[in-house]
Figure 1: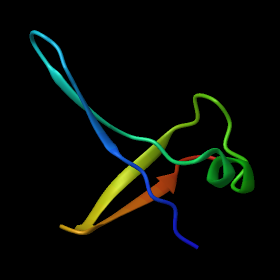
Figure 2: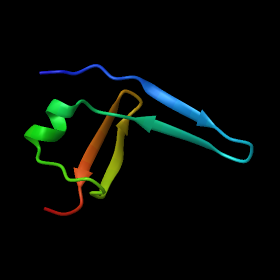
Figure 3: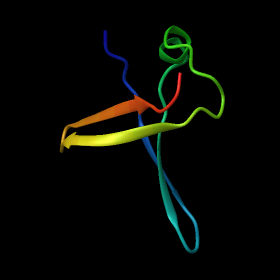
Length: 55
């Protein structure tokens, strides 16, 4: 099952940060906890892989 999300850009005077949020339902099913560390891996220009570093 897929879930749509928007990519957000926060621009500050000296930096830019990109954010990708995922729906509550995904976090709930995967039992994510607040502050949990994850790692993004670029697969290709259309795909990212998110890996949980602990659990």
